[in-house]
Length: 149
Image (cartoon, rainbow, N blue to C red; front, side, top):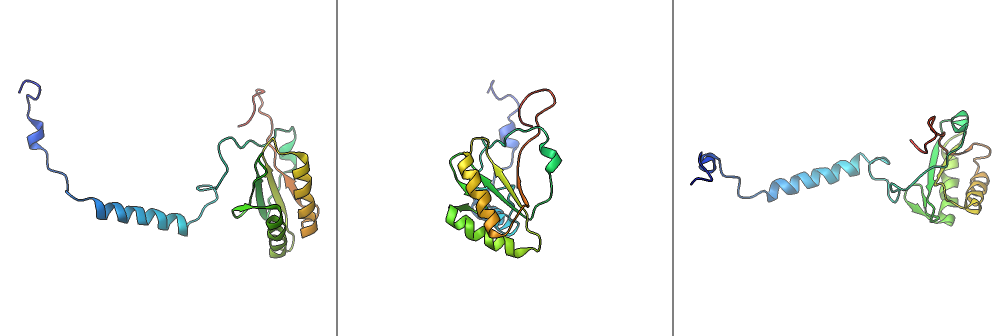
């Protein structure tokens, strides 16, 4: 009695007994939301927090809008509309190049991707029809000398 002097517990309403239906409706609405309004920025598969673009002075000088984008991780994984192998990437690039009159490609590679992988991707993009409109993503160095954003 001394630990509960105001007896607030007796004045509270009892909670509903069954939340199962409400839980399922909310879960279903969330799934439907992410399926209908698919966003690369909400559920990008495989791109973790350790993905870092290379830092290069003057990177913003060559910035341009592109029609297609791919991302490449250090492990050699290639993401476009999902995880692709190099052969699948070649087919994907051909299909993307046919979609627009002046196709352009943004290649976001993590800082540790080998140059051999970079060369293979750029040559595949040129063969697919992207020509000279291939942009390799990089970040400007910070003004205070620290890396990244």
